[in-house]
Length: 85
Image (cartoon, rainbow, N blue to C red; front, side, top):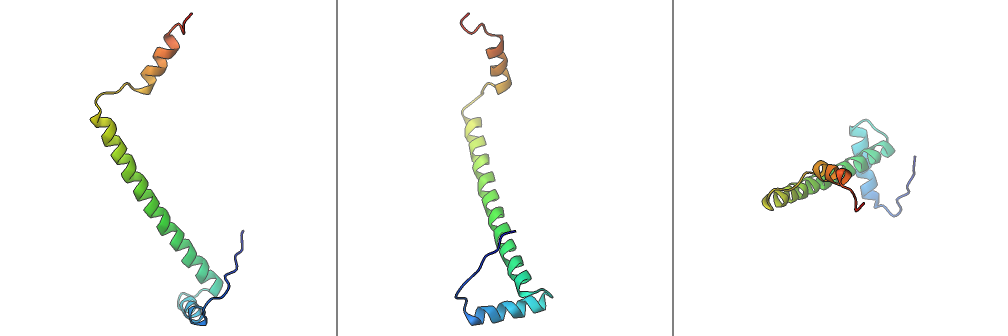
């Protein structure tokens, strides 16, 4: 596992983190680990929502352009063709 060092934290921040850790029955390190994990997970949820919204938009754009040939049909046509022979 990786380790990080955070320098120059305000003493008031450390005091509040210690209090929060005590309330949650965790060590200071465990509390900071939990805070970081939650922050990253929330960020990933936001990225997933943006990604899914973009995929829905692309799906609408493809649908609006009319019928398209499914990839399996194009592959079969390519395999069955004579390839210029």
